[in-house]
Length: 174
Image 1 (cartoon, one colour):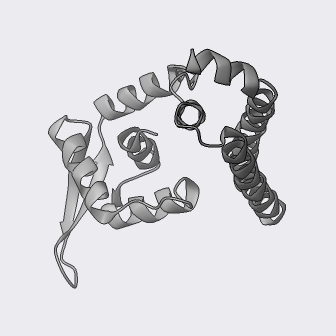
Image 2 (image 1 turned 45 degrees about the horizontal axis):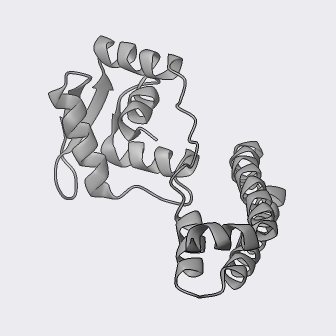
């Protein structure tokens, strides 16, 4: 996710302080991975340097001065371009899980046990996401559905790989 573009989009509704941007970002997009304050302010500094935001005002606070940032016309154009560009599909051609299966086979360890363990972990996470989805709002449901669909695809791959394990073992050992 582009944090900079997300900030630009959030600033289109009006100027905000870095703290406000972090809070809104974390509520809407970062529930599982909230932003660090350092990341917020380094992103804002980069946007400022690139002319995509300006400091609209500075207010004294209990600690450091609080800068209020506003998006520029160039920032609006930048976020429009970003939103119009399709995301590149991630084909997962360099899978850590595949690497582990092959290394298990090459080193004489049980690839079947590895696949079983991974299947259990996927199912555990799917149960957790399903519970979260049941209790969540529409945004949370959509995020959970996205993750669940990817996990379902992974489970299909795990089953297919388990079914082909003997053939794969012969191939990697030859």
